[in-house]
Image (cartoon, rainbow, N blue to C red; front, side):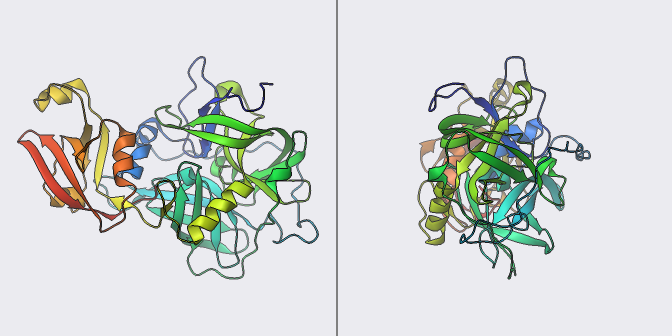
Length: 396
């Protein structure tokens, strides 16, 4: 075991479409929302910038059977704690995306959430709803409902959703993650493999606390550093992201956020301490937006983008590959309204150069619908600058 606080893991977040095969020598945490097809993973940050994602690959195949772990799901919280049965308060989350040039929505991913309030506040990971144009939540015994994003913290991977028209829902029992220690018994419950239905469970122990990890999307092109997470010795599967880590009293002490890549096997997971997550939730509830906490809907420009390749740069008469390639523009979108067409290369946003997908995302996702940005781009007709009024877009 590596010393607490060191960073032995670099790999993938846990979530749901299927990841590409692990490369030799790979390993580390994966996102548990859903394994994302390679092109989608490469473009996942496009949702952050308000772009429309093109989903590569065909429909999802049936989820594999989940092996029995012998885990018994707790049926009630500890005496005196808030909440009801943790099983009834664990929900399935399925997201859909708008695809460039296509009518309707296409499935994007699957994950897990937890009911915080009887009127339908849902706690989950940011990456579970990232890029979603539509969010569907299914609660055992209460059917399905759509949800909207109240706020997200992409840096700490926390999201707060609100179910539409909900009341009388069972809620989780909150524990105190500051008391968690290595060796404590835990139960991890979630939507393993995104198959839906009753929550699945695995038992294990706390392996370490106060860990720092780098969690990646399946393609490895997008990553984020998570600090002060709980490492658990328990199987974590795709679809479990946003699920609960329960202590021996059935109280939630963490939110599942990442697990090992295929090459490093099962038996390890990582969770955000519940105290940290609820602190972020309270800031969202209070309307405290910041560079890290984003409230409500995000700005949307309506382009599909990717890094610039030398051939396209030459086609556009550019001497370098600086900027971001616009591979498609949604008809009627804010980008289309100012005359942007594909192929084009976005050079600056509000006078600041954008040379990576993250820089473009950071320039846009802090804006809300109705706000304006100044965009400079180059296409085969030359250079253009226009003021773009952002519309409503997918979750960040």
